Image 1 (cartoon, rainbow, N blue to C red):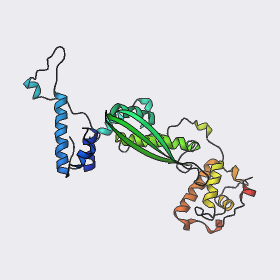
Image 2: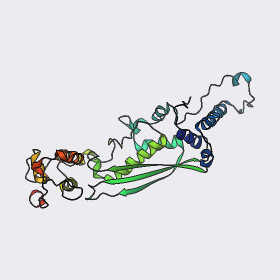
Image 3: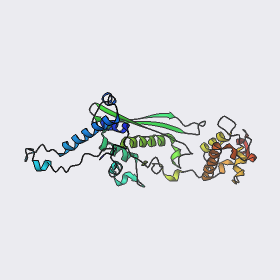
Image 4: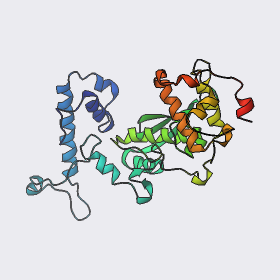
Length: 297
C-alpha cells in the first residue's frame, strides 16, 4: 500500500505519467494533492482488478465465479515508489553484475530494460575535456531514453567528473571514459529510482584497466596539477613547490622521484589549503616560476 501522506505531489504526478500513461497536460490540469491522490487510488484499484480477472483459455471460458472474485490473491505490480522497490530491483541482478554488493553499469542497463522498457538511445556529451589548466578534469553528461509506450518516452540524465583528486588509481588514467561510465550509472540509477545505492563504477570498484598499470612515481599530470595549485595565477596559492615537497618530509632532489602515493598526499594537502589558506605555512610561501629548471629535469 502506498503511504500517500508521505508522498510528494511530484511523486504522484510521476506515477500517473509513467505507470498509467497520463499526458503532461492532463496531469498539470489536476489541482491539489487530494485530487491527485484520489486519481492514483482509482488507477491502483483498477490495476488490482485487472490482475485478478481471468479471461479464460482453451479449458476455461473465463466466466466469473463469485467465490473466486471474493478472494483476490494477486498483488498489483510493484511500482517504483513502493517501499520495497529497492529490494525488488536489487534482486534482479546476476552474481557477476554485482561487485561488493553494488551493481555494475552493464547490470543496471540490463535490469533497467527488463523493468522499465526498451532503451531507445544512450548519448554522451563531453562538457569539459581534460587540460592542464583544469587539472586534467573530464566532465561528461549521459542521457538515456526509454520507450515506455508506443508514443511515450522518458529521458534520464547523469553527470560525472573525474580527475586525480576524486578517482583512485588507475581510474583517472582515462578520465573521459571513466566519467562517461559513471554518468551512465547515475542516469540508470535515476531511471530505476534506486535509493542509497551507487554503482560499482561510481565507487571506483570496477574497471577494465589492470591495477598493474598504476604508476609507481608521480605522473606528469600530477606535476602539472601541483604547479597549478602552487602558482601565482588566479587558481594558485603562491607556494614554492620545492619548499612544499621538502617541508612535508619528502627528501628528493627531483620531483619525478616522488612516490605516487606521496604525490597524492601532497595534492590532498593543497586541496586543504584551498579550503583554508590560513593553514599555509609561512615557510613555503612564494612561488618560483622557474622551479622546474632545477627540480623537474
